[in-house]
Length: 371
Ligand SMILES: Nc1ncnc2c1ncn2[C@@H]1O[C@H](COP(=O)(O)OP(=O)(O)OP(=O)(O)O)[C@@H](O)[C@H]1O
Ligand SMILES: [Mg+2]
Image 1 (cartoon, rainbow, N blue to C red):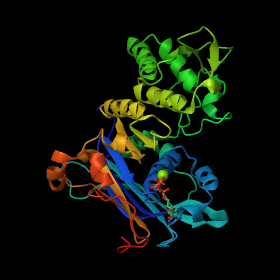
Image 2 (cartoon, rainbow, N blue to C red):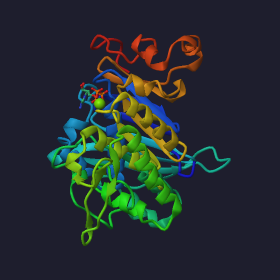
Image 3 (cartoon, helix red, strand yellow):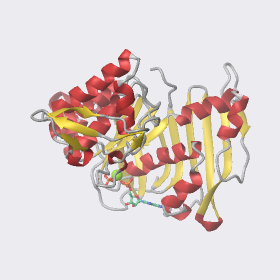
Image 4 (cartoon, rainbow, N blue to C red):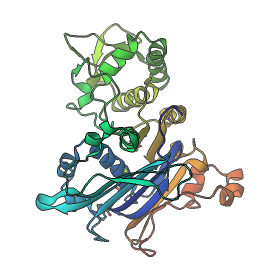
């Protein structure tokens, strides 16, 4: 794998996640009942991305303020997020402040030197509203490494296919360095791939068209015509030369185009995070999507939450993280492949999930002790 790798994430006090520790692999497939806490875990990774981008205040505001993000059941009054990758680690402890804001009680990076008992730790201060990582990264060393590690953590939401969806608007051509979280620059990214001097990028563009045609055989190709500094997503069908707008793509086709472009683009973020990417896709498209996810996981880390038995069937037991609600709190566990070996001889992973052998199915509210 080319990118830096996140090996572990710890969360405390974030919405339904009282205390959790999840080891991250190349491919991480979160499954669980409605309300189990899958999207809350994705929310933690979104929070990390916002911290790195110095947009914590904005993120807390649009999500309903600190009180909506703090665990209301455990009420410890603080959110702790810890991430580790290689010899480096990052920890942020956020506490509520006036105006329902969150501020840093602690922000620390650490580096475990070879042969040393204790890691070297560097505190970045206390009481600040936005992360000090970027400001201190110029010094180099662990802070700049940690910044690179966390910067790679990107959450993508392609659910919005309404008339006002960002993916259907004009996109500045220069905004083509990587697909945005809402695919608002999809046309610019595809145009850059199509016209790239790099043969690998041009080939990736052709692959996007090819996989979209597998799922939507009526699709001929994209029509990407720059208009001054902007470009709009348009396309043609196999049976005519009429140029259609993105509005004339079906919702599922548009989402699949976003997913294919994200997963095939030449440079991937270090950790690609997707919540229910199967939304609105035909089972055949879900199988194609699983192939793209698996391929992408050889170039970057991939983390997804899903409710789809079809999607789950495409992955191995080692990829799964089971999310359950115990006593109102989300619990994350990796199933033991040895325990399931006999079952897997006869049943697929999705069948085991449906039979409730893996766990992750709805149980009585409040069952079990809160973790
Ligand atoms: N501030 C909070 N404190 C405690 N629990 C919370 C808080 N905010 C949300 N929750 C719990 O988290 C649940 C939602 O979890 P989440 O959205 O992660 O579910 P999910 O696993 O993604 O489910 P689905 O499959 O339906 O998308 C809510 O039902 C609520 O019980
Ligand atoms: Mg969800």
